[in-house]
Length: 334
Image (cartoon, rainbow, N blue to C red; front, side):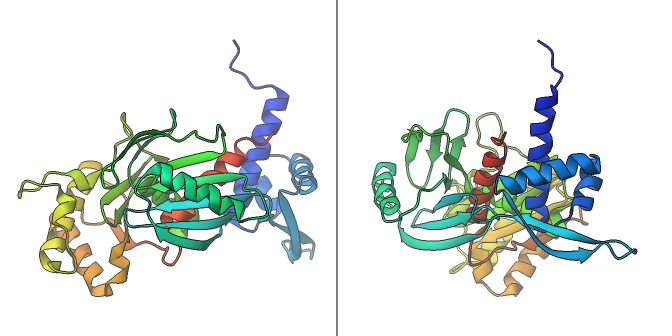
């Protein structure tokens, strides 16, 4: 079978590429799209007109983009094109959010995390019935290992949810992904300082400790989807590393243990950037600076960029879950 693309295939590919560019740019013009894609002005215009007609994008005010005074329309995503229910699960609490096509997430409700996935499903069904509109996607963020191909929650160590099939609605519009992976996706998509970064790690410090790893601009999951489970590193005390971290009661020792384990990952993978999120953002900035300095002290590489997450009130994992649904939706557009 030939691997070459038909004209129809190329039109679909170009349409998706342009829509993703508009999403990532937030606001752009036809000229910028033509420069980015290398397509002719006429091809760009044809695709843009199609996206406008199908209500994927809006035209806004015009700006001067030429020294001759010609004005160009500003293009942006139609945020109301799809509705996404975002479900962010942690060990103690679960948050529900309303995601839109522009990537914004509004937190709707926070509940104690149910003791089983079946109980969560029951609550979710009741919650959805409260709304008068239909969600196009339900996108989960969970603290555990997910096989995204067989649609299986393989293991959530702190929740004890194991080998659960999540295709209970028999729908392609149910998405489940690891919270740390979604956090690095959110940072890569949203943060300007990640534009040129290809290799990075997001350390998520919550009830457990996980890492989202990006290698060559792709999320790295590993053979068994267990990449980044840094909290399960063996500690000298004979328990998992995450069990000895207690920032409230043993700050100095916890910072030292965190720095050591993060430095091991840095020495192994030579990341360009380390991003840290989760509970640490609730502490004074001095705590993060101490952690940052110790990571550099223990690492072979000294010029790595280290910062806290750009997400605060709405966590990176929720925003990443919204982005996950948006990219899935765009990849299905014809």
